[in-house]
Image 1: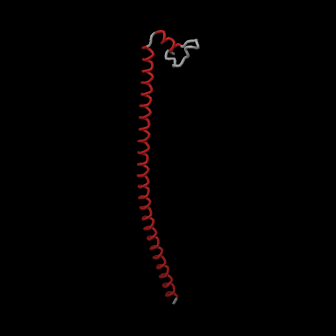
Image 2: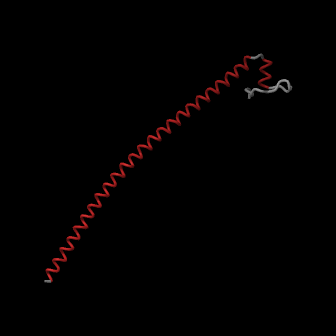
Length: 114
């Protein structure tokens, strides 16, 4: 009778151990499935962020190109203005480039000689 009780107790322990093993396997499968989902989500997030970064970099580059073009245009305008000043008669050029102390010749143009 004692051995029958021990045998029954061991069978119960064996059944509990099998249930625990099945639960662990089930949990491992769920964890693996969740990891796969997480990997897919991370891949999608990385893809979206990469696309957004490419758009931002493209816009930044376009803005830099526009700024460079504007600077070139301003430089060309300044050069044209300077050429116009040098086409003037020497007296007029001197008044514009050096200025005049007389109130009848106000200094309006920038000083290109300095």
